[in-house]
Image (cartoon, rainbow, N blue to C red; front, side, top):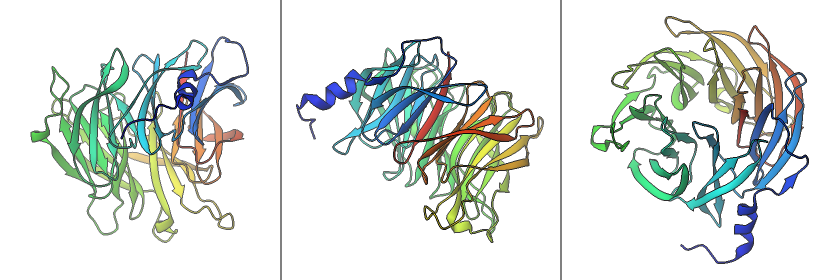
Amino acid sequence: MKFSSRPAFWLLIAGSLLITTHLPAQAQEWVYLSSGGNISVYELAPETGALDFKQSVTLPGAGPLVFSPGKELLYAKGSRENIPLIITYRVGLDGTLTAAGMAKVNHSPGALSIDPTGNRLASNHYKAGKASIWTLTDGIYRGEKAQEIDLAEKAHCAVFGPHNLNLLVAATGPNMIFQIPLDKKTGAAKTNLITTVDGPQGEDDPKHPRHLVFHPRLPYVFTTLESGPPGVAIWDWNIRTGQLNFIDAIVSQAKESNANKISTSTLHIGPDGKMLYVALRHGEKDASIPNESAIIGYDIDPVTGKLTEFGRFLCEKIPRSFCLSATGSHVLVAGQGDDKLGVYKRLKTGHLEKQNQIETGARPNWVMTLKN
């Protein structure tokens, strides 16, 4: 399918700077939120948690976001006439975005990951059961597809390892993680050497790896386990081979607590590597049903990597996405069930204290921050 020649859409995207309320100023910390067909940019006030609106960039189908390693570029999923796109934006000194490139992809990206060199972008494709690795030219996605890799349905996220040894793809349906080794020189996936590691198998175990994160210093990977009941898993990561080995799983919500309507979504580690936060989604939008969505905090054992829960904090409904601020001082939670973004102060204990909440566009999809 070819794009039509109507110029309005392209000018709308390429123009990018559609609404700006202030002249460029010295940045503190910028918040980027995709929701309701836009990417919104705010400045975060560190003391009060206030969000000062800066810009709205129109992007139909706005979804997952990821920064380049140097933070000078932002990549975003968008769409036009049901054709999925990846748009590259330049990030200005004032945090605002200017479109630098746009090209279509074969399948809609579920989450975006960039390799440590900044030369390749990867994503999972949930319905197609695939992962893709795309080549970037001068940091910009121009439609060059490096590889499309067949895996299994419900491939839920693809993440490059920190040493570029492999690409890990968590898949909820088959309850496993695909381990895709990469060529050291070219970065190409060695598809003939793909291995898998199973999620927990016990009848009452949490299952179905959804999102994963590498510990910044320790040889461990953590994944959410979406359901059955929902939980979080700890995996040993061999730094030499890039292979995982399952260690342990923790139930985040017991079966008797409405488990078929509660699931874990994503997770993040604090900058100091001492604490892990996991989003617990309450899947009911019915306002008459009490909201049980929460961010759960875990202490990470500095030797074994094992987790100990220290608190759970009620949050916006159905938090598909949340993030820790770049400084680690705040947690921002995007609620798809109530179309709100919450700002929480992160105390020294790791506990979260709500400071602010704003309305968003429909079904907020992704939130990230950047410190200039």
